[in-house]
Length: 391
Image (cartoon, rainbow, N blue to C red; front, side, top):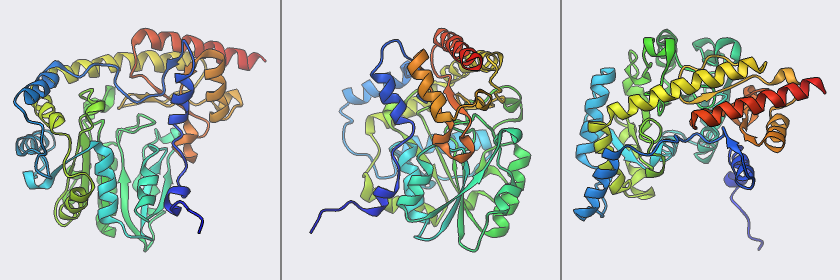
């Protein structure tokens, strides 16, 4: 008998992001606008708390759900920030948001169920649903509406098999945000159709400009949504803790118990040292988060203005640390543009097509890198675009 690979693994394509990281790693003098990772070092209070936990010998497993003190702090934070009423037993600490995402998919979706996922979207969302046996139905969004999904967009794609709506705002890759009034309309729709909602809000602390004035639209806080929403968040982005691999999921029953069961068998518990660090993040790092947010905002203005000056229309990203310039005026596809840009100018960015059909003709550029490097990257992109248009 020939050895074979499971169909679920064969059917999922490799990440469209990782390929460009690998190319960049093989070249000298590359400026990477590709990786969605803060260039800041984790705040000192977090590192000190981790060191202290090691000194105290706190190196064993925690409870499956995570340290009670950490879950209590998450509950308090969500109550103060969004008016949510969770108990510590509604909070599950996970190995990054990635694990929380997969847990929710496995716990709530059966083979053949349909999940609606607005796109462009982060590359792992669709595959996670596919691994759970669900059918992914993409909901296109467009630059003309600032890549914000609407209730009308969603309603057109609901069928009797639809079980879940996935939301992720602020958005990776576009930087789009969800306005509170749009969320209210979506909430009414999903309540009427009795859908689960899975909401990845990892960038909720990184919001800028007019969107910051309006405030982050937390999905679980909308009317009628907490009981049907699994809220995902974590420490990687706002706290510059990507390598600590710590996230969390908040859910009411019966979703919580189902996710908890899968988590028990999948990983036992999230990293202990990281959990002690996260306690310090929630108690001692608000000033650090704000300083990083302001730095990102300054970089945001630099890269958006620079790309526009280079002749690449770029809508105003309201959150996260990505912009999504339109490169269609060059006559190139996203893939060919990104390939030529890294080869000719040594600037790495990710083709928008890696994030779904609506991303073709765009490029994801991360501004989570040093201000001076962004200045030079913009100069190189300008030179590249000018040369292409004159040839």
